[in-house]
Image (tube, rainbow, N blue to C red; front, side):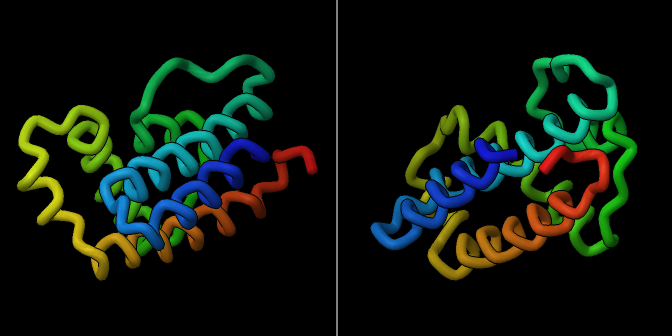
Length: 122
C-alpha cells in the first residue's frame, strides 16, 4: 500500500512538467499495487505477475462504484500503450494536459476507495 501511494505521488510530480504519458503509466501502477496489496492480504501469498487491473479486481473480490470500475477498465487499456509506445507522437496527442488531469483525479478516487478495504493492514 505504501508503494502505491508513492507511485501516485510520483504521478502527481510528473504532471507539472508535462510528462503526461508517464503520469498515466504511474496512475495505472498505483492502482495495480493497491489491488495486489488486497490480493496479498486475502490470499496470504504473493500476487500473480500481471498488469491486468480487471483480473486483479476479480482476484481481490473487491467492488468499486461503477464509475470507478469504468475508469479502471479505461486505464487498464491504456497500460500497454504507455508501457510500450509504438507511435510516440500520436500517444502524446492522446494524453493532453486536461485528459491526464482527469486520469490523475480519478486515480486518487480509486486509491481512496481501495484504501478503505478492511482486509488491508494499516
